[in-house]
Image 1 (tube, rainbow over the protein chains, first blue to last red):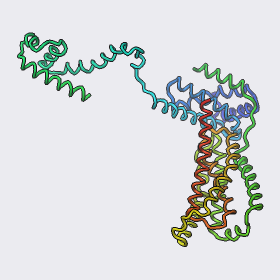
Image 2 (cartoon, rainbow over the protein chains, first blue to last red):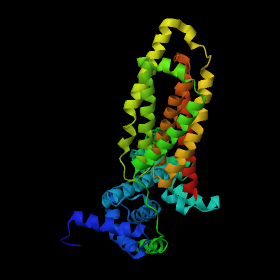
Image 3 (tube, rainbow over the protein chains, first blue to last red):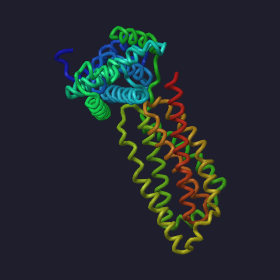
Image 4 (cartoon, helix red, strand yellow):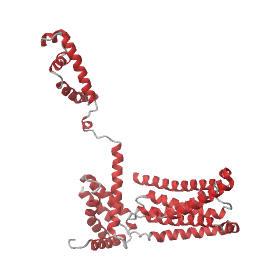
Length: 188
Length: 218
């Protein structure tokens, strides 16, 4: 088609469609094949993902087939085709918008098992990620108090012996650490 | 995916029976309007009191109202046929605006004059129910035949096309009503006319919307 002007191309398509309306299947097949890149270009304005794009191109072809009796060969074919492609493309976009408004995308959803117990490990690791970071951000005496008293579950006396700090100091540090953790985790 | 598109093209080409091309929209609108005009003329000559109508039509504002309704009817019908085709601009929906403006302005003026003469008594429902029944009754067969013709184009955007058709049908019914309406338009009349037009436009639109959903589910 190189060297052929747009107007000639349009006239050619228009003649092919007129022949197709009269029942010439070969002309129709040629027209649709030649028109696909044009349809793809119109649809690509709204749909960039290749699979989605091809799906909408097929919808446009079906629409063209359904309304091919409305084409008047006295009028430009490309305009007729572009209007159908644009309309179908926008319809597909709206439909997608409606579908996505009712669905959520969650990558962990694919890793969910039917047995709730099987998910526990995954949930715990997700929940503790933030906590680990928050503990790392505490001051050294506070972090020590939390590790000994809450994570290793030592008694105050055992923790006092292990750290060399007084029971009163450990109590104050753990209290301040919990307060700091609460603020940090709620603030996220 | 591309090979699926190729397969679809092969299938469509195999199934491509010859089709009868639709006549230009203006021709189709003209034929429908001519048939409706003939039917209306027959009903008016058979049943309307033409002497009363001639006396009322001598009033300028009444003439304007008649022109407004008939213009809205014709222009909205043309717009509906144009909008039923896939390559027509949406701005065709603006076509009936001049007729609609004339119709609303002339009816509104009648109401205002009626208000000056009768005051709040103009709100009495009186004969208005007959107008309501007339507009709905006349619109039904008109709408059925128009929708039947519009759907032959299998509109890709049926709603604007149906709304235009509904407006055209309701305006023609309101025009015909003037031949059986031996009194001036009151506030209540205008309200009832507007409600009936809205019902007709809404009903035609809703029917199209429902059938569109059914098609989409197939």
